[in-house]
Amino acid sequence: MRPPSDPVRSTVHDRLSPLRGEHRDVLLRAAAIGREFDVDVLAELSRTSAARVRAALRAASRLQLVERVEGAAPRYRFRHALTRDAVYGELVASQLQPLHREIAFAIERLAARRRPELEELAYHWWAAGDAIRGARYNEEAGDRAAALHAHDQAVRAYRRALDVLPERSAVRARLERKIADIAAASATVSFARQPDDGA
Image (cartoon, rainbow, N blue to C red; front, side):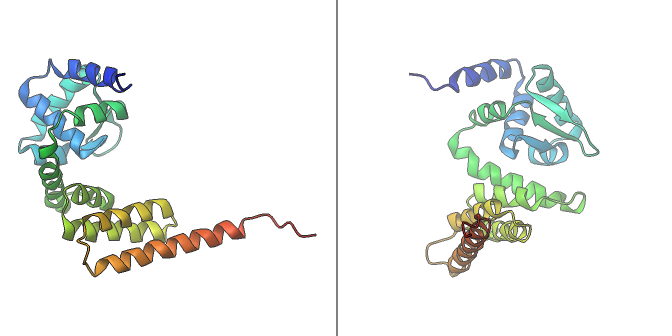
């Protein structure tokens, strides 16, 4: 039995077909950035001008693949999460880590012009499999989330940091301690919220 995502992938593949090579490559890189993406980052990643990137995105927009995001910064997003996933699925597995590494570098190069999102850098360095940067940015993202009591988000970031670290890294113990502290804090809050059954 075919998985339910097959019809979506087939439809997206058909919509990609009319795009000429350059425009298709831009869209594949956009999918690697995420469902929503910055035109400047995409231009930096594609090593081309923002005007050419916008031309590719207009072509993709006419095919109902992406849409402009309202706001000051030039941003687009895939119309549906499944559309982004299907386009991302067109990439060859061996391309993924190098591509995420290029995305992270592109974000860092643009840091002087735009404030990079810590979570973006954390995700892409993790996806690139970079032990040093992946661990550092994800620990920072986890600390920020923990400070905001976004416990699930914090644990996810700490686990990503653990994911890229070697088994013998001294940093692992610190991260595992932070995860344990969050679990303990969450349990305390959960217990405190339980109704009092006493008289």
